[in-house]
Length: 315
Image (cartoon, rainbow, N blue to C red):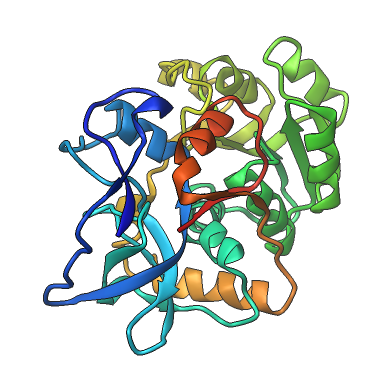
């Protein structure tokens, strides 16, 4: 089968097309003919060797797939333990395979699997969003942010403020349901938010670095910030609990992998997201589609912030 293999850690240049033997499904696994594989920031961390938990060389990247089993069943599944999604065939744990409504496209389904579940969890569980609260979503045109904007509204947020790096991305966030969209540059960030509102209750941050710290400045008393990424590649800043106590603020970190193992943390929210999408009530943002052989270009575009929405590879 055609696949992308990584034999050394590095940047997008280490994503090399190759021919490999198809995997064989073991007990509790399904062999899936991959219709599309998702491309994530986490894939870039696996490729450069910086991913939490580590990766053993050589490997085939890709931890989310949608495709058909030998019986014709159309399934969506994470393959976090084995990887292997950047290929024509992959094996998936049968317990994680969720049926995909035909009304939901491959790209939409993949947008829901990691990005959608992340948005759902950070709003429902990490921040425990309450109706009427003000939500600030950083990187609101990205995979998680674009869904978080919509879900925040669906879950009853009173005001949703989106931040993004370009006018086009801010316009997109408004189109998706954000009430206001502002520039996400860390310089002057808090002042721009204060021009919109006196303070926010919830900040969703996937950027880290100075943007995360700027988000803290915008919070009301008892406000909550959850960080679920380091897309800015500037690290996650240290937070002094005594400084948080001055306004009774809370800062949380989120990682999807353990959340999926919590009771009600995977099948139920994913089924809810798929149903909302099939009914036209949620619009997962599908970005560029690349042939499998262009995996390198997909990572280059993602790292350069040239993309919006979910990127997918098509074998």
